[in-house]
Image (tube, rainbow, N blue to C red; front, side, top):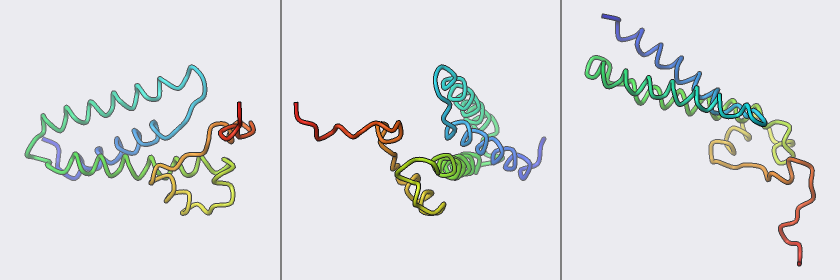
Length: 119
């Protein structure tokens, strides 16, 4: 059987790959293959966690931590050109992305804000 540290290393690598897959924002019809690939890897890790069971009990927490950290760091890096995040430092963007803060779609597209427009 494979040693426990190798299982954990593979878990970190798979968590990072899923985090990159979920954080990257493809535009148009090519958005869904990245999401599907991430969900497939996620399901494989869950199934492997049930199969391996008690031999490597930290698979789930390590995978979720690697996924979250990679997702937040890649998301902060990709959003550096958004108008809301433009003046922020990298670590401030990491903090904002980890809290779920997103830029307005209309502001990102360069359209005027019409949220307070009267009809």
